[in-house]
Image (cartoon, rainbow, N blue to C red; front, side, top):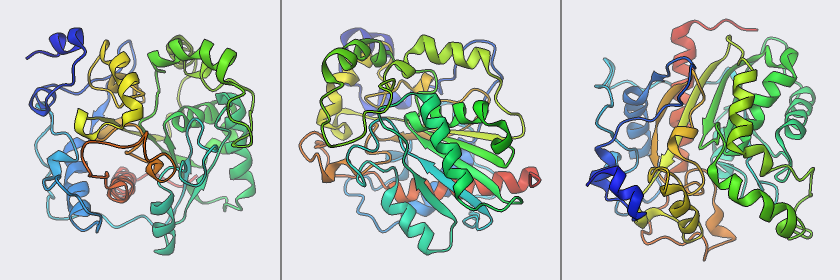
Length: 349
């Protein structure tokens, strides 16, 4: 069965159909992305095997990380995984509405605490969940300025969902602070926006903007409009990303059994463009131009990074009892980034 027919019928695809596809990159004149999937798989699978989280029906690593037909062969060091980086200052930036149900909407919240207890210099940055990119870029800048980071420190910024877009805006608006940034990682980031924003912007501004009393600050109200596809594409065309930074991208898509109940309707809307979506973002919109593609998680937009099931158990319910091993995903990402920076000989700021 072809993806074209799947898209036309807007039915849930089978795993075999999805595995028979190839990686999706942004179009246009941007630099060709690098492919890090093979090495990332080696690291992720080793970490996931010792993660300690129940995997339920996902007993094989390729059920956690999609192995598409164009994935390169394994690297020359399949038995060695790098150490967690101890010399990097790591900041994980929250996504849209990420301050509305803290701490359960804080990306990788439990995992950040565990890594910090092991000596990794990592912390969460909660930006305004209902504001646009410029507002949140200022918040990221304020966080870094008040963090007491040494002038010689190397900074890694990880953005979940809209947090990745906010990070790119930060780099453009605060280039003096961005000089210390050596790496940016997007996790399920709507880098090129999302068609859902086109449909949701009017509804949010006219009907839903006042629907979060006492839950989170209203911010500047630009959360949805900042994710319009035409807005994001124009921004990328007008802004050159700093060349001294190494960029990485992790995207996600999944099947019906692992899709949250609350994401089924938006999944169907996005499936008209591509059934490979996480319920919020199309895979082709989730890659930073010029970045290294780490892989595609077999997870929906929530399960890949946040423990939304704690506060919204009904909306986050899935046919499969499996919860995605978020600890392994973050752990493997940091190991890959650390190894990549080391092998590239990235100098300090």
